[in-house]
Length: 505
Ligand code: MLC
Ligand code: AMP
Image (tube, rainbow, N blue to C red; front, side):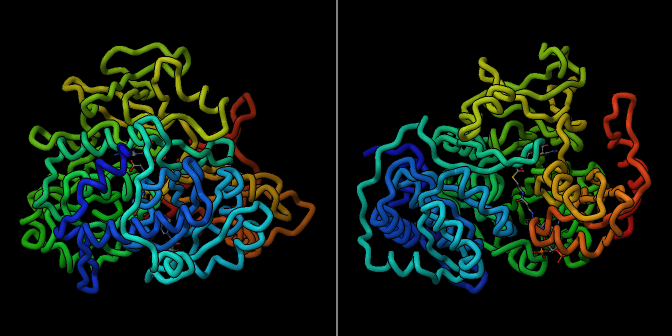
């Protein structure tokens, strides 16, 4: 049976004794061993009664087994739904319910919290821990290592990735097999990946960057990865000499530059450093080149579209730009009011079209229609311009979004929660510059003057509901929020007023 995603990324390596993953404890996993485990997992999924198109929600630590689950879903025609390990039970409940997941796989530490929700929603619950142990693996051990791959074509769904929205409700971006395969193919060519590459992988695998960029590129090229559980500076420095390439968010690069052990000698042998998910400061770009002789290759993408543009491998890598559209991707700049295409050089909203663009938001036809035009262009919500050489510059966002260390945070979700807290009349959440995370979350509160306001209590309560990375790093009390004549909160005024708050954090 043919299955575009499985055959192209995984099945082609059947029987290969080449290394796929190098783990920090010295263990090596060959492509063949990886695929055998994935196949056993595919059998387990089917034995639970899951069928083509069912969703599997997965909140597990980064591990080879977690990756094998992705392969298993591809092979069994099941939609893979990875979730940030920082999400609280409250946050997870929404994803499980909204996606209608038939199976939830979590770490032991989340089991008790998720049990009641899964029971109400009728979802099966299994566990998988960072070391691969857990009920899911235990039920897969005795399964066969061959499997009749479920037939799937390019337009069929491969994965859901949830992305927050300006209304505070997350949307499930439906990604097809063709979205993933076409993008991996383009990136392998553009970035010249081959079997001789070894990628230092320190990103999480529940987002586009670590899963569909880093991992899919490796699989497509048949190269290998040094698979670190997370970005740990010591481990990254230790393993860099064995790698040929690395992909990261800007925080990875500023952290490396902040460490004297990251010398030119340690990086010189590398072939490629890629940055994305958040703006890379031109200053970081220059400092990196001065230290290592390498120009970081910056690219631009998003959950709904995978990668859209990239600086060239061979040509000029321009600091402060995200390069040119990838082959097959159309990118235009339009007037946010009229939607009309603007002249080259003018600033407007970035729209993209191509085989990389998702199918829409799960069960949200109005939101899909608002962002995905009939002619196939997706309105990214980013503001930019195209320079005289055809390079795209991102100059801002047309959406109220904070990007902290590469994670997207929608202020609305946090404001809704802050507004519910005792003593709070209203709130505004803004992103302010942060030396490590690029931007960080600041909560500005107005007291209702009826109840006493307890900032520590609010922090605690918010901490129970929201993942740590979304929690305001600080709460500030003000008499009133600045508003324009229409009564709209002037977030730009707040951002300006507090821009130096974390300058020396
Ligand atoms: C962790 N914390 C964060 C955070 N990550 N806070 C704000 N922003 C973040 N990004 C919190 C933790 O809860 C903890 O809180 C403290 O910071 C330290 O936790 P840690 O586990 O030690 O994490 P740390 O090493 O600091 O993590 C930072 C990071 C990580 C930058 C290494 O966030 C990361 O790997 N980011 C990559 C995100 C990513 O993959 N994005 C791609 C999205 S896809 P406390 O209280 O203990 O301090 C996409 C499309 C595209 O955008 O174009 O790629
Ligand atoms: P996400 O929804 O998590 O996939 O994040 C996508 C958003 O990250 C984009 O819409 C951009 O705002 C931002 N982004 C990704 N890559 C870059 C980049 N290289 N420079 C600036 N912003 C970026």
